Image (cartoon, one colour):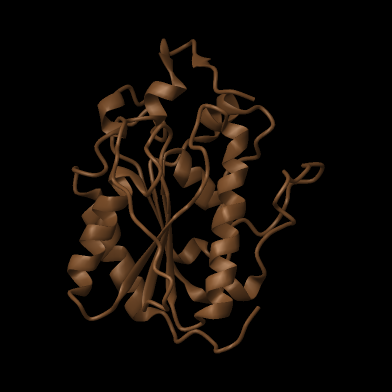
Length: 236
């Protein structure tokens, strides 16, 4: 189902969730010490988007060459058709599980902005709501053992439940899985109407790449990476 206009607020979900950005990052085929799996926001060009790039830059600066950093841009349309976000959930899940199997020592940071934050949030889910039919490409939640390899989850401007409901009436709420919740940081800029109750400042939703929250998320991720125990050397 395509996104509808926010009639009551007089502004569209597309306008709220879709600032333009063109930053593109490529995946690293070796085994990096850290890999960022990031889903861009609505209408952003293929890649990790402006917020994702700001986060990766801040993270790399803090690691300061002490760890290699790979970047995987989640592959999904990031379009007005919110149901297609399921393609991103499948792609992120497949990448995380593949990396866990091939590079068990790599510490994974899962992230997303706007619609991409929904993608990342859904990727962590541990249960499927009763009666919900999983979209094509998704067989169920990731195995619990995968969570050991995910050091941190960082979400920028995660759509509130009412925004998700307007985007797709059949979409379930975004619930962070219990194994991931303790290592998840959700950032919502004051006044951001996508994530902040009563928010009316559309510019706030576009400001994560420059409002200091990318740095805040990088600090959180570095601490989580440092605190994470060595991943078990096994496949799942």
